[in-house]
Image (cartoon, rainbow, N blue to C red; front, side, top):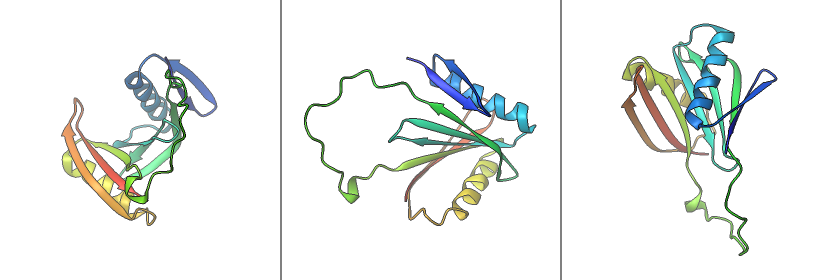
Length: 140
């Protein structure tokens, strides 16, 4: 299993998701210069991650796409039903900043620019090696 990072027409394959996300962040920072944080969104339906640099609460530069590995389990042989509205999976957006306030400010700025977000299910944050990460779970 490998993860593929696609950025500015280049791509590279890496063995782990962490390595792929780190590579995407480094490619963006090398391209646009210093950033104050990161916006990372995971689309569970296609298992892709979208990484973009954030400076002063605004997205900067192109988006890097990290493509997840193909499923290793055989396709289901039984029919699947469409999920009911209440079963729709929440989406997640991740923001990182040097302080909790900085990460929360980036999240608030991102939400303010997304009128299609109709419901925020949960907001969580935790410290990382380089700052703080805020995760916003939402529905469209």
